[in-house]
Length: 454
Ligand code: NAD
Image: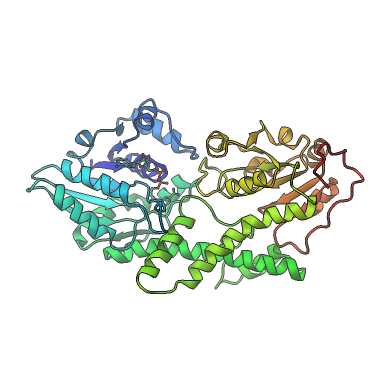
């Protein structure tokens, strides 16, 4: 049985640690957040991630998984140590903030056991060259006779499907100057039967950035096409369908909507563009991808202004807050920016989300909350679908319409059939699905209470 330590018990560290325990390894989850570790020790998963909680319970009960805040407890015994701490955008500039990686590598170096060899695996998404830098930090802090090798193993999991992505990944990428160490790490993944690509450290780090940049580019591409569709009267959903059957193109990541968010795409694109800038290059495509994404969020607010006349005094209901369904993650979620813009314009913003309301309340104090989609709709002038949670797929639109002050739906994810929504008596406005809807007439509207509305 191999001993594994995972530093950082967040979305990536928890998935990696719990799934590796499930493959029969002895795993210690290590985090500096004492509250998070206490929750884990009591058997609770501190994040929302489908089926990960069940695996946590099973593997803790089997004695293969423990959690601690102590490097001294977790590191010396470990054959493999994964670093899975966050690498957010730096407070100044667009580069990655590597302070968490630096702190983790420093403590790890100090606690490496003398007289044994430890393989340190970097799972965090880090700028190209970070693997060498981590090796230097380890060398500065490790006891003289502790041996180690550094392997880059970028993570490609999707929140909401993290367990399946660990268990059946499309590929495993390993990069190192020490090929034997990379081969040893590869044995940890044998149970997944995934193709394993072994390369050098920098190439492995770059594969992660290039993959995220490519996926984000597809999203911004289809969003730009959506804008053109809207002006020219075409339907982007059908355009994407027609494109996706082409084997050279494929259907994935061609959904027009509010753009990409989350803890990865935006910050990884910024970091890659930053690296290119620093190398004296002009990453125009990456910048355009980010600009188009920012425009998609502003677009929703423009659509609401068009449909409502004025946002001052309007009551807008947001269906969903998290950056995508099946996660509680709000990092760089479109909802935060849209809600902020609406509040600035004088609207009242109410939201309902199955998993993201607790965090949203801390991030946006002006936001109000409802207990479900139906109470959300009460007295709203418009609803906006922000996150395509399953429970929003089969709503009773006649009931929602009756509760609303003005019957308007902006479908930010193009999830609904416009025909069904209009048949229920609502004005439907999607993203790039033909010409924008006209402002509804006041016939079936209840009187507005605010003097500032049109
Ligand atoms: P996260 O913020 O959810 O978790 C990071 C954890 O690290 C936190 O619990 C934090 O307390 C802990 N931590 C910070 N400093 C520490 C230290 N010195 N010692 C021990 N623990 C420490 O982050 P995440 O979403 O899991 O992302 C981790 C990395 O993986 C990032 O580089 C990210 O870009 C990358 N990644 C994330 C995803 C994703 O979907 N979230 C997917 C692929 C790659």
